[in-house]
Image (tube, rainbow, N blue to C red; front, top):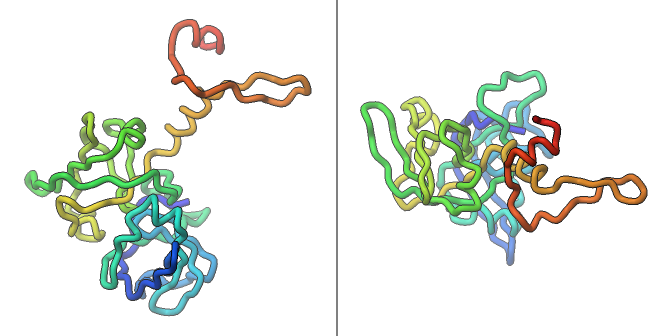
Length: 227
């Protein structure tokens, strides 16, 4: 699990492209203290497993599914990436719950300044925006941010100078593709409400069909003990 608070900005030093997968080599000397083979490292919001580690960086395998769902396939040698090690059990929880399992990608439509704030307008598909709420949390390239506005085609965030300076997001421009992870709580709530379970003949829970969207009504609340 991660928090969305970026610890360091690393750079891609090499990419080995296979038939359907890749191996990323990331240079990040400031991050490597205590990192071991097998550790999870959020790389632009994607949870990767370090397969080789040295004092200056790490290597990680990137499977086809990850390349298909993320922007990692568009990285090139020299590309900057946001990095965060997995949160220790006794660590401070400064961001929000981040799994590193992104939901998909969005595209920056516009970047603008408002005094010291840096605004990003993000275009995203409905499969992502359905979980995005104003003043809720969103992860963009591994950075935990607050949704400032929502619209039919996406959402906007307002980033403070500190975040822009310490992460690779500050160098993003209109047209750039970014990795997005929605707040996991909303997805679980939707799944549970859409799959109300009923006991089968031997006492196990058998999921009901989830072909229709859940409807919140007085009857639903009464039936489930809320009224």
